[in-house]
Picture (cartoon, helix red, strand yellow):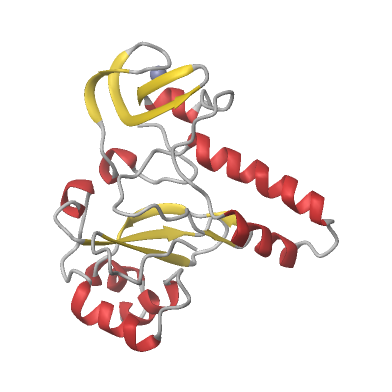
Length: 212
Ligand SMILES: [Zn+2]
């Protein structure tokens, strides 16, 4: 499958339906489910080619939702020479690209796509203790704790998540992730090896999910 800037290995990491008619090109192929509507009509599915080539750019339909406030904040720090208007324009451009060319994720809660170093991150996999251990030089626990996007989570809560909530075994694909009632989405910065974790839970009482 073609690769996506903000989404590694979609054939592994999200839902795809076979032999489905793409609402944009009409071809029957493997498609992402993407039910949405704008003034030009409704769509039900979109093929990887149409999504990657930007066919949603002239539509009022998005597949994901980017964290705009944090992106603007990061860009202002990185570019103190730019005016507020220039920062907003740059952030808008990045948001448009993310939201219209990225495969959709099926999540419990409506969280915002994270950013780091002034760009949106790339989704690379589902978090587990095995996953963080594999990517850390010495033990994955610190990597996990430092990667949490929701900075309101205390050290004690983060340790609890590591000890009691994170799966010990690797969650290697979308299907594996669907049996979890708390899912850890792991992202990596486009320009660095920095990891970002978003927690998504079907528990309505959960305070860990990062919406803001
Ligand atoms: Zn298509």
